[in-house]
Length: 290
Image (cartoon, rainbow, N blue to C red; front, side, top):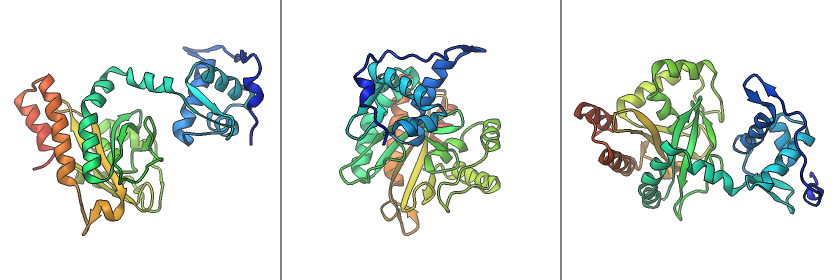
């Protein structure tokens, strides 16, 4: 276990002496961002050694960056466990993203009710740079506590119901770029063959929803639907997950109607702020099924 106590008893003014510009990037900033990314890549609570390994930095550099983040509220240090985690300032940054903030605020009450009505964990996720990113999550008193997809965390696009919904409605050239990066196997049940995955994506578009069983965590299942903006463009996915017998019954998703109702309610709220052309609204609604 790494001892960090001394770091918080000194002046704490260490800086990265390797700061320099590399093209248009500043190396110290890139290193700090790598440290921040380590928390959603590896886990919400990490030791110094784990952060340094994930960020591909030596421990001295990682320690100085972490100390600066702690001082500014972007990370916290637990002296008992000798581990770091992200601080509340990160939440302020996430909330300041304008196009996502309004969606989160608009959807939060609806998705919270969905979680309670279904006894599931509900996710709102978006596509970003080749991955599915969790924008928000909601729990019920009966839902399984999910730690593998925290707010801001990423999932590969071939793993899980929400990522495959997002992938299914991306432009064709973007789908090709995602698949060119390769696929990830999280369990023996993950679809990794590009041909099989493309067939699944076509099925998602045809029926308007995706189902995933055991392909992210064995024993858990999820269903997901796309969320469209007033112009008929896919902007997010709404999904719910839980133990497989809770989500899948007699071979069929158990909460399709509840999920569809929540998505339509969010869509209606989006439309109320900007009335879309009729053909675009019809196209967006038809993708949700009857």
